[in-house]
Picture 1 (cartoon, helix red, strand yellow):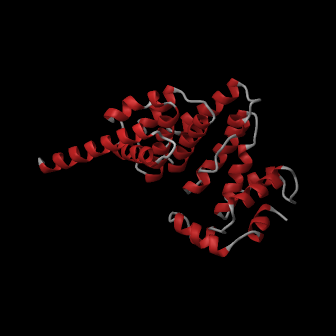
Picture 2 (cartoon, rainbow, N blue to C red):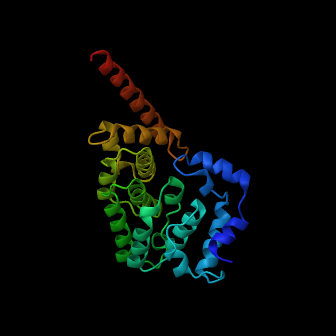
Picture 3 (cartoon, rainbow, N blue to C red):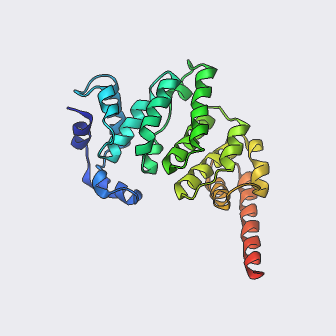
Length: 247
């Protein structure tokens, strides 16, 4: 049994219909409806040689036919070391990434492992920063999510915050990822991002509004900070209305 066959065996039509509604940018026929837990199992099976298809053969089989195969691809690449191998594998794959669900599977083991050296971690973060400067929507989103994973693992650097806060792109899914990242930084290291959020200087207004919304909606952020974010949003809305009235 290869990866495709394993996933089709686990497909759930009801879940497929639900997930397809969340992925309007993808053809419905490309959504199988496999749970994330099952996809992780399939990824581990191909990594550990428990399928008839080898990991190198699966990774070389681009493009894949389904969203789930792409997610399993990312899950398998997450485990690659050293960082240079992980980056090469991701950059071969990213041109085929076509939806947010695939990029949200990015979680490099190098950022999670206590055995990773500072140089390996920095190499992963450098890849994320480089991807932010690309045009392809889901390559940019992937770069932001690498940096988001880094924040969640205790690696928060001011240069990363500055670059993400000034990201310029027309796609909503990039704006959402940037807002998610900045709201997470605000939760964990507020001094790194609060001055920029206070004024919105240099920020795409769409990213600013999504960031503030996520801060307000987060139950991990303390009440005082949520109240501050609510007040700033109200001020921004009032200012925007006044500006339109005087046009």
